[in-house]
Amino acid sequence: MISSSLHPGLVSAHCERRRRWPFALTPRSIGLLLAGFVWLIPGFWEARLAWAMLAWDALVLVAALLDGLRLPNPAKMTVTRSWSNAPALDSETEIELTVENHSRILLDCRLVDDLPPALVAEPQTHRLIAFPGIPARLRYSVQPKERGDWETGWLYLRYRTGLGLAERWARAPLTQTVRVYPALRTGEEQQIFLARSRQIDLQLRRAQQRGLGRDFESLREYREGDDLRDLCWTATARRGSPITRQYQTERSQPVWIVLDCGRLMRTRVSMSQTLKNSGSAPIHSKLDHACTTSVALAQLALYSGDRVGLLAYGQSIQQRLLPGRGAGHLRQLIESLALARAEVSEADHLRATAVLNRLQPRRSLILWVTDLAETAMRPEVIDGAMQLLRRHVLLFVAMAQPEVEAIARSRPKNIDELFRAAAAQEMAGRRELLLARLHEQGALTLDLNPEALTSSVLNNYLMVKERAMV
Image (cartoon, rainbow, N blue to C red; front, side, top):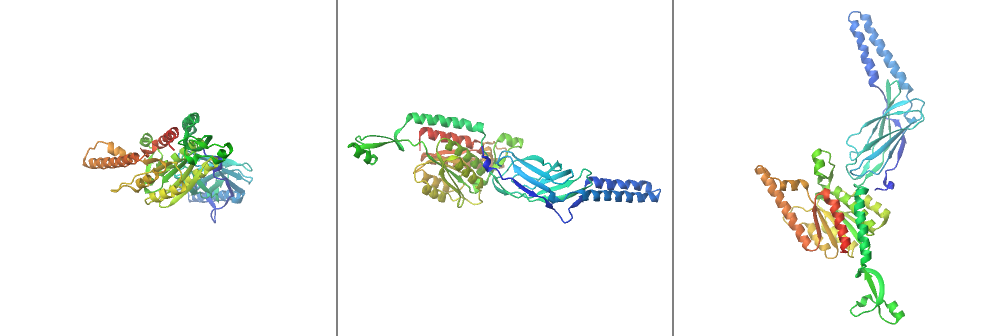
């Protein structure tokens, strides 16, 4: 779950005049004015009755003017916006608007909250009744569509009395920066992987694989064949005989999440084919799905005692976070993932490889989420992966395109579909060949649709932990 400290802050402001002449007639008063034309019917026979229409309209306008003068000044209205939870993809966020009426008149209010398109497709009009001296509240929900920082606009307010012949326009500067975070897995889904992680941890404790890794375990007398570099000279001096150190497999390992933010990760895909057919599936980019998986892996790895780092790159390094532990570190990682943006150009994979080798000289587990470009030559990302394999355990994930796979599996009905199916099958074959060659070099490779990405990555992480591969 996202910590409450990630919530957007509460913002409050006094209303101010929206225009130079901030009054208007309501539909009720306009309807009464139009009703005056009824006097024109008897006016065809008696001209003096036509003057009754003018008298009626004048009466309505005077009543509307007096009703408008009763409306309080906008400065007597205070508006507040608060958020029930941190905005995240694939989850609803509830917004509460509070109107405080400091006048002595009951007001019928209509509010329009100007939110960015990343939060709501079109602004909606909300209605509430503001009693004098009593805060009036309304709640509505939005479902964010894009990650990142977004600026909210002003709150626009129209209010009228109970008579409802005139209304006044006002606005309040409720501008603030709202950060939309990656989607998170539910607690029920995460519990399965956490339970498996606890089981693996208990197995490793019982095994106590001595001689592997570089975590100090105990001291013992030197035996023929032991590495001289493991001699403990202080203990040797105290006991008068050679003493060597014994090591065990490290329980805490560095885990790096490497995200490709190049043009290939801008592609938008649907999470579920079933939901897609029903028209209710959320459409996000491949990078959005990769960020969701990264948060899930970070939660599981931190729970397992590992340290998690992040490297998001495009043409340059966008986000860099050294491995760490704790709730504060997880928050920093989520903040960094929220700001990762897909670029329009190809990512510089070799630069990312060089930076990662410099930041992590010791052996670690690396999750690299990317996609393979369709080029005649070997993609640059494969060359970068080969360099990492010399030192690290690499889990290389290529995000597939469900539409291309569907075309490759389809049965052509005409010449055009035949050529499309042949091209899709050629692309799939080339991807399979590249990943097979990378697997031969020792990498763990996955070619997955976005909907299967998170579960597969978490299962592979647990498999690496169980086998003590790092």
